[in-house]
Image (cartoon, rainbow, N blue to C red):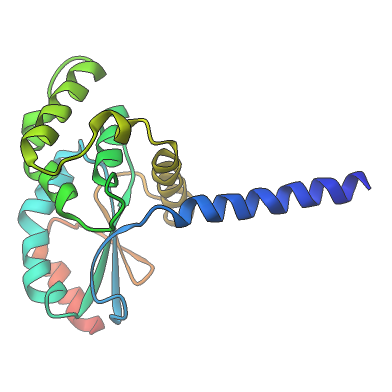
Length: 193
């Protein structure tokens, strides 16, 4: 009887976790049925990730995403508390869209400064306030379901893809080295299409 109760408890935890994750949408763009699926593990305080969003992503968008040739999913791999809080803001509307995420990367230098997490949160709150996204900052930061979703992304990245640094690109299940070199990335994608 005790064994059955334990098994029932474990199974119920699995379904509760599935239900909780279903409430939060991944941030994605492009054709979900595309042959090429690109996953980017990133941290919002990572300067290399901001460079990727400013210098590589626009080319990907023009050449592949807007043409329906690839899908891209931005996954969370926060490297510190400030990135963790910013990821909560990026997911706050829970609409799966990327505008807030791109805004945070484009304005990274405005909020990733200060010597304490309080300073960083204050700067982040100001950037969000000035953005016009109409988010309740404190409510977004305190959302435990979003926290769990972000942490699960990070755990899965480390476990399934051996992510150690950001940004890391996974293309059709395989790690792509040197995500900052758009020429190589473009050639690699073109071979898969």
